Image (cartoon, one colour):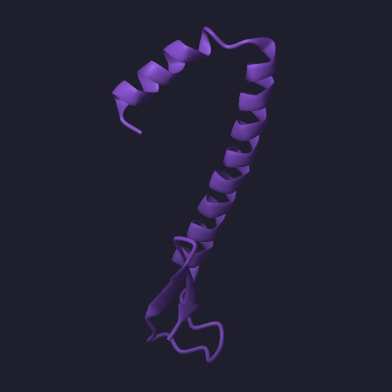
Amino acid sequence: MTPRELKRMMAAVAALSADEIETVKKALSVREGQVVKSAVEQARMASVRACPHCGSVRFVKDGHANGRQWAFR
């Protein structure tokens, strides 16, 4: 999201009704969980020093699923 888009969205927040605010809160809560999970997975992947299958220190992280890295070779 660009700074301009964020500014526009923040201005729109001022016009939300109570029901709309609750809907936005729920959506943000879900998104926050996704972001935290992704950050934890990225930190875990960055800390891998050896292949979890064979123990080799010479390996290449490979493969992606849902935008996340998942496999080794």
